[in-house]
Length: 271
Ligand code: KMH
Ligand code: ZN
Image (cartoon, rainbow, N blue to C red; front, side):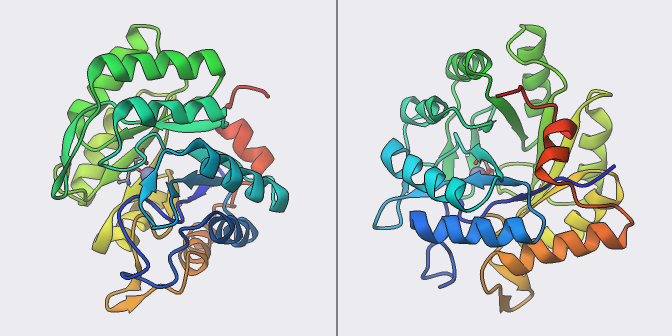
């Protein structure tokens, strides 16, 4: 099966003071996504920032960024409804009104590094129902086993349509550690027809991405998940991270999925 590579160029946590090549402004993000598309990424996972680099749910900034990307390439857009730790859930859930092809759904409230990541159950239900209405495919972010069970309950309530699409997110302080055992344990518990990708945060990003690809999973690459190409070496933008993930997939004799193939693999609702 071809590999779906998602680029996550910015995220909600880092600043250019952490890595000067972090794209934070609309045109910077569009150019980074276009470069990643040329390296094999078929999905772009987007967070937006204001002019002070603060994470924002500002729909105007989001639209400008999405339009700039669409002018450059046909990559599939996945908007984050995580947005940023300090952003109210009521503002975050409005991101799906942008009607992207996909958007993330974080099923549970959790400790997240030094902060709290609030995802109230009734809000998550409301968001899942709205995504269903709009034909926006949920990217289910599971940081631990209980998060998977929460998603299966939403499915059983009819709020999620199959096949379910999961991101197994490992390495966030507050969620499951970034270990091969945790990846195996979670991947084995997924529904038979589920589609999944590995998201490994921080220093285990390379190893766990390699294991996830070898296990048949898809992968996410980008400066949302690591600012380093290797220990002690800051990455010069997102492109080297995406290129390396594509090279690993090919080394495993797995082709890299095009946008059209990705629509098939993820069985995205037609637009
Ligand atoms: N930042 C990642 C650990 C989201 O954007 O909704 C998880 C994430 C969630 O990407
Ligand atoms: Zn994100």
